[in-house]
Image (cartoon, rainbow, N blue to C red; front, side, top):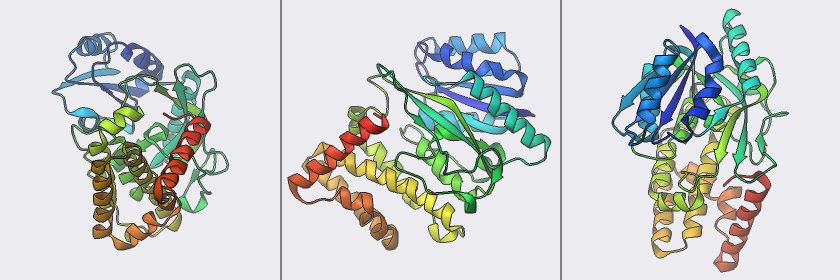
Length: 338
């Protein structure tokens, strides 16, 4: 069995796939790199085959008709033979030194028969034209360099979220949840992070800047204009997150709070994008989203609608909308996201 499986969803990635794979290969025989060519129309499939031929037993090229990011992650998870599983998008990469430390830590945990459900590390916004790199880390929030449980975590601050870039899940835990991400839909990485959290019991945090999260392409899914164009998919993911979690069934209070915070920020993003759109159509979608949440769980609706983010994004009148948008612009500058 491999120590770690890394799925690399790849669609028309010929211009940056080499950079990504070059940072994964130092894992050697302990790691399998699953390049999932998701129906690419450029040289991605050819590049993947070349890597498989050059690094047999380490790189596997998997070709499929286009299914979107979620479909590519599903395929990678189904094919994985590693004890642990993570996703590295084809335009991102891993830090060399931090990668070695992460593998050594996972190796030691396994040798001690102390495997964890979720291994966490930091990620860095690699934003074009920015010399200062924003690092998202969890010092003071998560215990470091030891196995811990939810009871031992602290309070997550603004900007500290357990995104896909922070996560290495135990493969069998992911499979035991029956996780299947929607195909042909963007933003499903939120479901990948969110849904399995309810099953996690043992965690480990290493304060290393492992994942390099590239921001800069105009067609990137997290580009604000692109997100507005794909607002239907953002709302679809938001609804799936609402219906996929029964907070009453999570006995640990801190675990439930962490998962709730994730849903709260995704719901805030949905509302913010609709606020930016500022049209009759966006107002209709806004009302439909909140009615959907209310119909599903009235208590959850009240908690989200009248929480900090809910109130901030529902300030009355044009002045209220301007305050909300100005706050968003400030957050962009402070936290370095797109």
